[in-house]
Image (cartoon, rainbow, N blue to C red; front, side, top):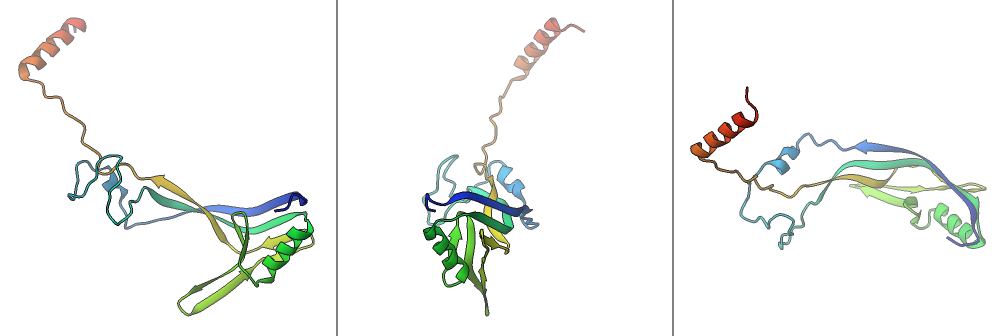
Length: 165
């Protein structure tokens, strides 16, 4: 954006959309001492070809009806004209002003609409993710202190002396 553009304003409708995975039970990440023989150790990254999963997306940040206004320089006004013409894919910060997408045999194009003050992007867009950090897996089981019966009896005797009933 040119330094000559002033009075920039951005408004939009937004929503955080949770991702539900009924097939995924995150309890697995908390179960102690499971290992398939390839475990790299707590806090270390495995050296294999498959990447780790340090974060799990739990929600999408979605926007629509993005309205970007301002007093535009000639350069920025030309950029907006190009973006809203639909001839190229263009964006403004995290917002896509134009582009296309396809699935199977379907192909669709979206473009922003030019206004006197700037442009409006009416379509829904994903602009971010909310993620949960996966704990070190598998978590190590907490160490146990093994106390003999005679030591346990001594502790009970001391407790009785400190807190008589």
